[in-house]
Image (tube, rainbow, N blue to C red; front, side):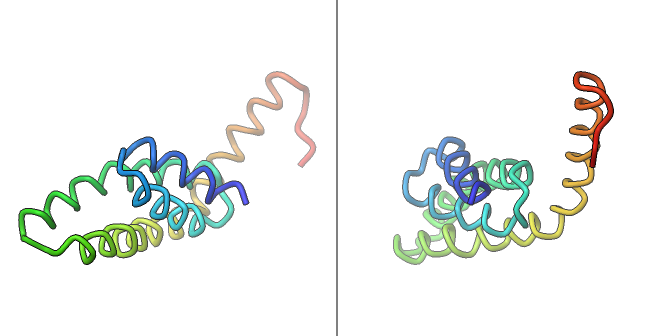
Amino acid sequence: VLPPVVGAVVAHQASGLGEIGIIGGAAVGAMSQGSACCSFLAARCFGWLAPRALGACARLAVPATASTLSVAGGLATAVGMGAYAGAPRLQLVTNGVRCFLDTLFGGPAKY
């Protein structure tokens, strides 16, 4: 439940595009295999790319509905596939940091 919410909030804040950012961020977060950190990074990437993709659609005279669907659906799927592929590696890094902090502040980790 957490990664799609994280994705929606981060993409909305990063892109400033309203509903497109929310829908795209939730889609990216849903593809992050349950990793909130991966969802955060992927939604940030989507939030950075979405305004640029909409600008490219406007320069190419693509209709508004098609550009919205392309960005909220197509771009979100492309970024989400990257998040899906990178989630296991990012989860290893996240678990290492979590174990280090737990050892540093709370004694040995019990995983």
